[in-house]
Length: 219
Image (cartoon, rainbow, N blue to C red):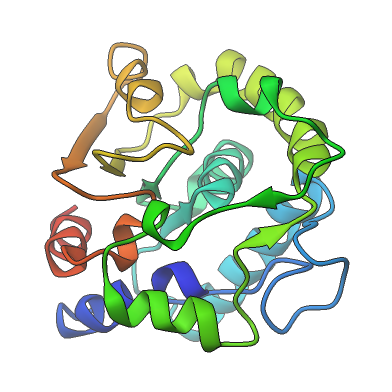
């Protein structure tokens, strides 16, 4: 939920309702810190949230969205349950293997400097002072387990997804470099990629988050 907070306020002014969840190990959800389980759990939870939103607002078109790891979950959910959605939005998407993950030492804790996440001072303050936020966790082993089978499925099935896909991506995303999502433009039926100038990985919570939200609302 943290990655969506700043943009959510702007989306609300566009008339967009945002339904969000805390993955296992994140926010208020139980579980080992930083460990979402596996992508089967992520997809199941996303489908449950979708069903709740559809029940409450049956006449409103649904768009599934995800940030970072959640972007892979959103794409897998769209593949799994395509008929429910009008479109897909991903931010900081990692649809291809990440070189740094292959090179990382799983015995070392995963750490991110605030400068590497966002230039927005309010968001940085939340990361430091909000007890539900975290910028370090033992996640290298988790991601090394989670991503490879998901990447294989995306490589095989994502090109067949017949939904419009908007990818917003920070120009200076060092976690999932924009070259990854840019490389998919020729493989997807309906792609639209917006590279946010000067932005770090958390484009949804960057200084330019209003512009990011405008792109999402227009999509």
